[in-house]
Length: 92
Image (cartoon, rainbow, N blue to C red):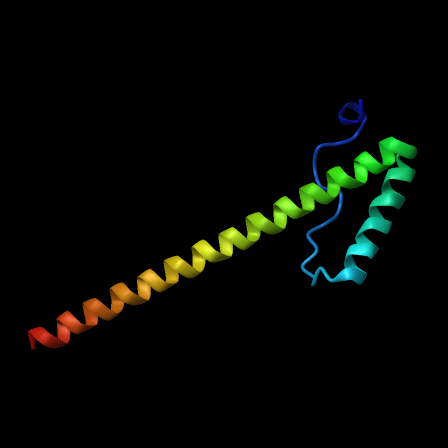
């Protein structure tokens, strides 16, 4: 089974690049090279690449969600500050 021989973590360092077609191909090539260095071939190599791509996708989604939460938190803080400032000005 593939999962027994392959680590269950992303082998590609955090890549903060645009994931256009060229970068995706470079990532696939990098994963292919890593898999081959680990002695994987054929179906195991393909499964390894798909697994790693899935992990990378999950990480990008997690970062995107984290950034969205941060934006929402900042928006809420600005609204809170605005209301507080309005109350201070109104009480004078």
